[in-house]
Image (cartoon, rainbow, N blue to C red; front, side, top):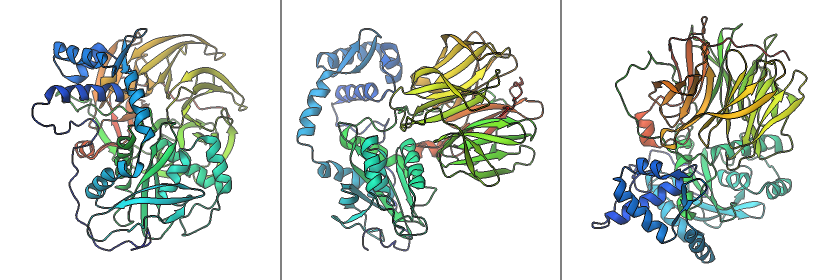
Length: 584
């Protein structure tokens, strides 16, 4: 069959996924090389840490005896493979890697480097895997691999459109912004199927989602009956030199398995070049530990399977819980009395919800803060504090005690500290209050309104600020709590009526409660590794609702945590503060 043109019928043989090449898994090593294997494992730990680690953190994560670990570390330092930052006491990769990388790039053969990964992907996913690159305003296939049997065939050398293929969208989304805009202006957005994106607005919305996810998807956009998913292969200047693509019949490569395939492509692309990848938060879920403690009568009230469930907020007048799925863009409202979950697809990334007086809603979208008509999905502008920063997007948002909207931003790919914190008043006027944030996240205030809590996820910090509840003036910032890398990353938060700070711990299988002095008070264990945010709700505000995500989780983790992406609830024994509506 030609290119993506035809999807074969019937089911192909699936080869069980091999642990080899899986991030965090130890490959098989020849006998007598145990010390070498330990050293390479340590290098992987240093390279993959979302932030540099200290000696004690590395020892704990390695599981090695301290003397053994110290000897290996000293050897790596002596060879220039690892160095210690004297100012912070942390460890990073050494200068020797830069020297070696330049020699590798001088003779780098992308096709040869990609072929083993194509072969592995085709065998493990049971579909066709291909490598492509930009060729002017088209995409050209450079190599392909597929198992025997019925498959989507790719013709090496063939050129296909950018805007309606997964490979093309992956290559376009991760271009330097100026280069990407110039390329967009040259594209002709021809329609090939009813699913083809034929307007610059819909294509740009899809590209923003691609950058946030780290991979692109195409649901029959080029050819009917064929779906595809792709991830960029990044070069040394952090621009794509190619893309890995998996193509399959839409009956097999459907919404249930196209996202897990995207995660596999990200890992494969990283292995080809050793690039750090598109997303800075590369921490993997720590192994699940069961302590036997009662989980506060935790139940999954909605097994939804969201890619990135987020931003739960209780609406006191409607007695409903609103929440979003950022990576499958939709706003939901859940009725805990009936279990009904209504959906409103937005067509573009939406990350937070702000209930407004008069039955209205504001949402944080990729284009700013916008009015949302839930019944139709229509969006209308309200305020855009970062309209001049195309690489950023807004993230978590809440109404503060001063009556204003407080909202954080972040770089779409979470790779640089370009995020900020803004205050937006009832007229939509905004003021920048804080900068230098990598991934802005949970927001909450103490019961008296005099302390603002604000999460920066990547460094693992919950900040606390002195706050004036009348004027919204921010005072001194201090470190309220720090989450060790080995324990996960702090995400969304909520403050209860007693001043306890509840924070979802991404990759930590839990929600933590901190006392007002910053000390850890209690932990609610979860059956999913990636809880994302929390909100108190119910008629007495005594129910803690917890959103979660399944994005980028390996198949082994999803098998152990099938409820990932679900909505959970428990009764922790303390009530939350009431949700105040924005006066817009």
